[in-house]
Image (cartoon, rainbow, N blue to C red):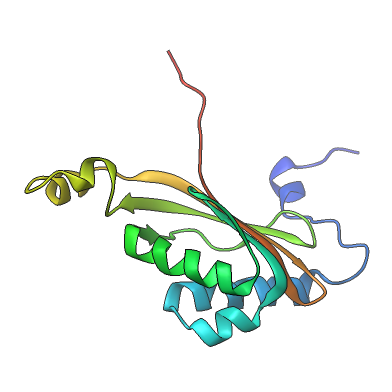
Length: 147
């Protein structure tokens, strides 16, 4: 029997039957994050959520909201891809980030202008369990150098 690899990529192991519910929660979390709906965003997180990004990891809802606010003031994120299920509990989406502060952006006068031309690929991952987001990670997507 032969398998088509493209079709196999769409099959996600779902032994407990929670994929559909978890995908709905992940999509709602990403939408609340993008729309800055803080109450819905907080309601979808576990009390001991691990919220990670470029600057470290925060644990708990209040710390996650503080990191979320600082992240939104320093980054402009765009998400051309949809939510992808990796496992029944793990989801990701891929997009781009523009750094609005720090580094080149902090150069007086020309920093904002220079950052318009640079963007980096990012990946945001979620782990959903028992109806809540347990872990969120925003990281740069690293590629192998081709020479």
